[in-house]
Amino acid sequence: MRDVLYLEEIEQAEALLKPQRVEVLRQLAEPGTCGEVAARLGQTPQRVYYHVKRLVEAGLVDLVSERRVRGINEGIYQAAARSYWLSPRLVGRIGLAKARDELSLGYLLDLMEDVQADIAALDKTAPELPSIGLSGEIHVRPEKRQEFLNDLQTMMRELFTRYGGAEGDAFKLAVACYPKGEDHE
Image (tube, rainbow, N blue to C red; front, side):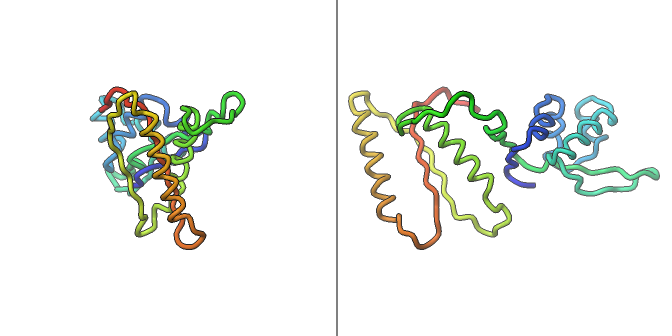
C-alpha cells in the first residue's frame, strides 16, 4: 500500500467522491473481502462488490489475493493508498492567472499545489528519499510582523545562495508562513 495516491484523472475523482465508496475504502485499509466489509457496514455483499469494482477500475483499490470458498473465487481487496490527494488541476484554474507577490495568499496556494504535485511525482519505490518536514508555531507581535517576514526572507535567500550551485542532488525547498487558524483533528 502506498502512502499517497495522487489523483489526476476525473474518473478517479468521480469514483472516490461518493460517501459509500469512501466508507468502503476506509474498511479496506486492511485487506478484506466484500462479505467482510458488508458485514461491518451493514450492507449486502453485492452492494459492496459494486463499489469495490468501481474503486478497482479507478485504481483506488487493489485485488491482493483470491481464495476459493464453497467452489467460487472470493477476492481479497485492499486500498491502494493510505491517503488520496485530488489534483487541483482536476478543476483547472478559475479565471485568469494573476501576477502574485510572495506575500499574497494566491502565491501560497500556487506553492502548495506545486509541492503536492512534486511529492506525488516522487519515486516511492526508491529505497531512500532524503527529505525533511518541519512545522512549528511562532507568535509575533503585530509591530514585529514585518521584521519577522524580512528576517525569514533573508535567511532563505542566504540558504539559496550558499547551496545554490549547479552540482549535486537537487532539492526543492518551500516555506509557507500563514496565520494560524483553528486546530483540526
